[in-house]
Length: 454
Ligand code: TYD
Ligand code: MG
Image 1 (cartoon, rainbow, N blue to C red):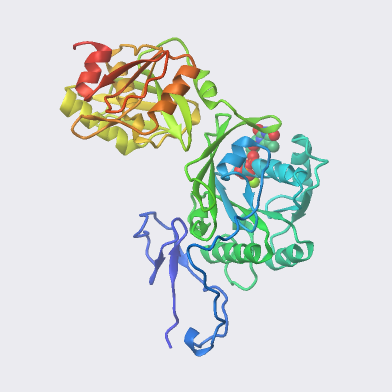
Image 2 (image 1 turned 180 degrees about the horizontal axis):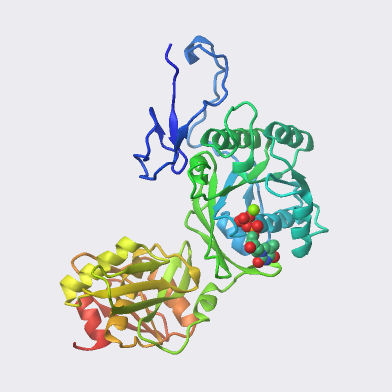
């Protein structure tokens, strides 16, 4: 019988029959490696040959009990979890190495322990002494969290079975080693198999498990994406190394809304909640300058103002630079094309730099209009009124499309002392007292309103 080989991509987890240099699914290079199958039941028999047990069925109407939740008592974290940590659930916290995942989870562990959960923190990366040192730095040395430094999954599962904690934190899933899978720790099969074992253990024993996953650029170590489908909740911890702001973002949540974010600040004593992120993101704004625009965005359910900065300069290169931080590069290309072909504002021969201030990442199309305003402002060396916020989506025809949650955006702008808003025309107007609204139907008209006839 031919040996049944299978290969999968460390980056996106796609499976293939044979090895190749580039992943067909996510186009990453050198990320494909051989898989070892998960350990399973009796070998060589089809599933139908040995009878399983009958599964109890229910209908759609009979109400199952809501699973109990425990709050951490940190709003920024509880909101992202959808209202607290759910019993018997599996979570994945992904992020770049060094961004602060271990810090966040040690602080969360202490909070949950203080709120009555039995918490075990298992690190495969640091010694107990190192974790204790971090604990002292965070002022948590007296909290009733139990620690272990271990990578052997069999020993970890036995310990969890004996100790019966309510929450186990595994830092990180890439360092775990299941001895029934004969490949190196960090490989796709090890990571998948460890995550699978931990998730099923958690479900069966009514324990919550939080697994840390490093986002990796190297091909040899599997990224957190290969286990995303197995867990109930996927959170990513984002931020720029040079900035102190950190954002915890829910990208998948079976027990709450996805897209919800929590904002933290990395301080000398660990992560601190940021209750009013708009004020923080705008705090570094100086005097009105060309290329600077305030965008009223929405992240999950919460409005958030931030500054968008653009710089446009003559290019010394034959192919001008397009550099973006915090926004989508292809979306920028689209806005530049619309400005050029629908509004007669060309950027040929000009380098364009676009930056979302403070290390925030924006994915909403509602930022289109603020980006366009920043670009035109930088190119024309003309400031946008500093008391105005801007939002709206731009279509390829140059028309402006209304966006969701207009009223929330306006209220946040009012709360932070803005008096003007420039936005797309919309049928149902949401007036907020103290805010003067300027509306436009297309981009060319908007440019004329803000920068005058050119
Ligand atoms: P860490 O939680 O170890 O990151 P990860 O687990 O994601 O790899 O955090 C590492 C960084 O955080 C490190 O560069 C130091 C910084 N830090 C602080 O600034 N303040 C603190 O109180 C702590 C504990 C860490
Ligand atoms: Mg760590």
